Length: 267
Image (cartoon, rainbow, N blue to C red):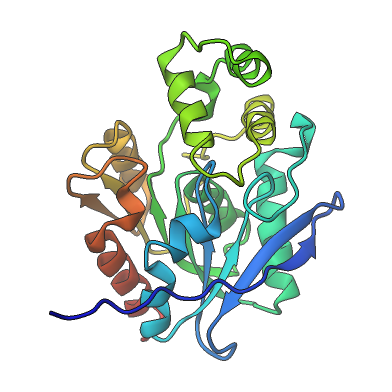
C-alpha cells in the first residue's frame, strides 16, 4: 500500500499592510524564480484550510510552481476588524495587489475558491496585466452573503438565541467550523459586501483563460456554469458528488485544476 505524501508544512505568516493599516497574512512556498500561483481561500476559511490541508499546495509545488497564499482580511492570521466599512470588494482586491507587489511578483496565475473566486473575478479584471490565467472554484453569479439575516446571526452570537432562518443558520455553522474564526468579523464582512457593489461584472468578465469548477451537490452549480459561459476563454468542471464545503478537497478538482494552471504556465 502506497503511503500518501505528507502535507506541505505551514510557514509562519509574513505580513503586508493594507491601505487602511490592517495586517494581511501571506505565505510563500517554492522557488521565487518559478511561475507563481496566487491562492485565495473562501468565506470563513483560511489559506491553510482551503489550499494546504487539502493537498493543493503540495500538488502545485510538485508541478514546479511557487505558491503565494493570502488570508483575506477577517480570516486566518490576518487582522479581523468588526467595522463593516472595512470590507468591500475593492479593498479585498487591493490587499491582493499589495501582497503581489510586496513579493515583487509582476505576473501570476490565480487560484480562488468561493469568496476567493469572487475576489479573483474582479482581480483578474482590474489587474489583467498581472494575472495570466486562473481557476475559480465554487463561484456564484449572485450575492450569496446578502441572504444572511444579520440581526438573527448577531443575536445568536450575543445571546445564544436560535436562528430561525435556515440559510443564516448554515452560514453561522460554517463560520463556527474553524476555532480561529471571529464570527463578528465575518458578519461585518458580509455586511460590508452588502453595502458595497460586490457582484461579478458580467459585462466585463476576465479575458484570461479561466477554469470554473463547482461541485455537483452545490446549489450554485448552475450559477457557476452561467459564469463560465460568459468568459471568452472559459471552461467548466463539475466536481462529482461534492458540496460547497467539501469540493476543495476533491482529487479531481485538485488534479484537473493544477493541470490547467500548469499547462498554461509551460510546466
